[in-house]
Image 1 (tube, rainbow, N blue to C red):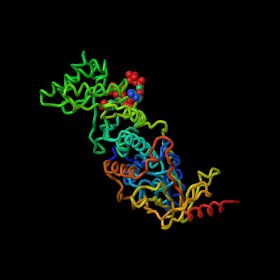
Image 2: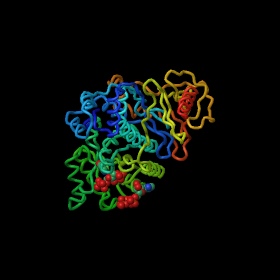
Image 3: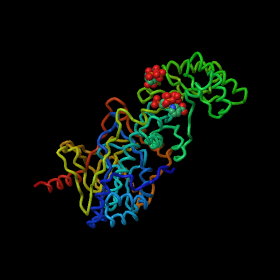
Amino acid sequence: MKEGFSISGLYTDFYELSMAQVYFLQGAHLKEAVFDYFFRKIPFRGGFVVFAGLSSVLEFLEKLQFSSDEIEFLRSKGLHPDFLDFLAKFRFKGKVYAPKEGELVFPTEPILRVQGSMLETQIVETLILNFLNFQSLVATKAARMRMVAKDKILIDFGLRRAQGLGGYHAAKACMVGGFNGTSNVKAAYDFGLEPVGTMAHSFVQSYDDELTAFSEFAKNRPQNCTLLVDTYDTLNSGVPNAIYVGKEMEKRGQRLTGVRLDSGDLAYLSKVTRKMLDEAGLDYVKITASNQLDEWVIKSLLEQGAAIDVFGVGTSLVTAPPDAALDGVYKLAFADGKPRIKISENLKKVSLPGKKQVFRAHHSDGTLVGADIVAFDEEINFPKMIHPFDPLQQLQLHPYQFKPILHMVMENGKVLTGIHDLLTSAKYCQEQLAKLPDEYKRFENPHIYKVGISEALHQKRIEIKSSFKN
Ligand SMILES: Nc1ncnc2c1ncn2[C@@H]1O[C@H](COP(=O)(O)OP(=O)(O)OP(=O)(O)O)[C@@H](O)[C@H]1O
Ligand SMILES: O=P(O)(O)OC[C@H]1O[C@H](OP(=O)(O)OP(=O)(O)O)[C@H](O)[C@@H]1O
Ligand SMILES: O=C(O)c1cccnc1
């Protein structure tokens, strides 16, 4: 698995470099700092987020550098020559703690912890947010579709509808959430997937008649022949022509792969199409459906008994309506030997100080309790947890099994673990979803997974906050 874009230190916001220059010129750039990546709101009114994008982040951090042309570009923008000499030799040497890709994560808890020098941890903010926010959003959307599609095949058709190059990372992220394949050839090549696809209306239109179009396709692409049957009249022309071609293929010792429906009532059309195919002895021919599908339409189609084997999903997968972005942020938690917080009038925006871990509560049978506690690294006992924004709300914790979800995945700028193939991450995601009780997975008003903080973290936050009072 290899990211196919050019890795550049310039993949950042200019203010990161301005701040880094100040740290450098003041001699503060090598002081230790810790940043946390976390989000505040679960998208889609859902009950969980699927963590994705880690392998992209790690690959990027490991290779991050500034080319001589890039250094000259920054020189022309007025950055200091001594700082540029430093950047010319820059490599990321920090540590990263993260959950496995495919892990279920929840608001407020630190998900990625980046630890290193002030300068290096600051300038990687933008790329971390860019990769994790988008890939986690798409992986979450994909996981919702996987939940309702059950054992049906889900294919990403989104590249043409994506926000520009986002379609590339969407193809990767949706695999983590449970998709089976992508039409995106570049993503398939870079991430070791099998590119999949059918045919477009233009192909059928380009011939004088539909039957010739289907026949030529079948003759020339017999190994992968899914015929688009809705260009003219699905039931009176498309499906009968596909059946004719399927029978001709059988005579040549070949098999028609499938037909694709892309308009009309997909439940009704798929049922009739199935019947027609079966009656013609083509029960092995798969039915693909596409056309503005999302988790709600897929759920409804299957509830209606639609005979659809493969769902091709574009727009809603890669643009993730109604939430166009995951609101993940990257906040300083520790610097120069001291825990740090960001204070806000809004208690929800007061950050959590220090080097922290997330401990996840499990029942003895391995299922999830629905509670994570954010605590300092070294803490081991959690008799209770405190609501992060409403300290009066406290929860006594039974002696559940608490397992840390953050693991060191990079040290001294080198990947230790965390870059898994997509199928491994997808399997891990499904295993975690299986452990999450159904109440957290339903679409309507899902149960709220509780994230609390330890007594020690709560006290430390109060102490630091009061030290800022005049
Ligand atoms: N049986 C069904 N139940 C629920 N939703 C469906 C069903 N069949 C199709 N849909 C969905 O309804 C929407 C129909 O949209 P639209 O009316 O644009 O499609 P259409 O009738 O095929 O038109 P067009 O030919 O312009 O694509 C799509 O999102 C489609 O996935
Ligand atoms: O509806 P989405 O979920 O976004 O899925 C992608 C759509 O892209 C294609 O349509 P398009 O009209 O671009 O090309 P086509 O001729 O292959 O149908 C495909 O047929 C789907 O309808
Ligand atoms: O292969 C397909 O059918 C396909 C690919 C991309 C978009 N829509 C359809």
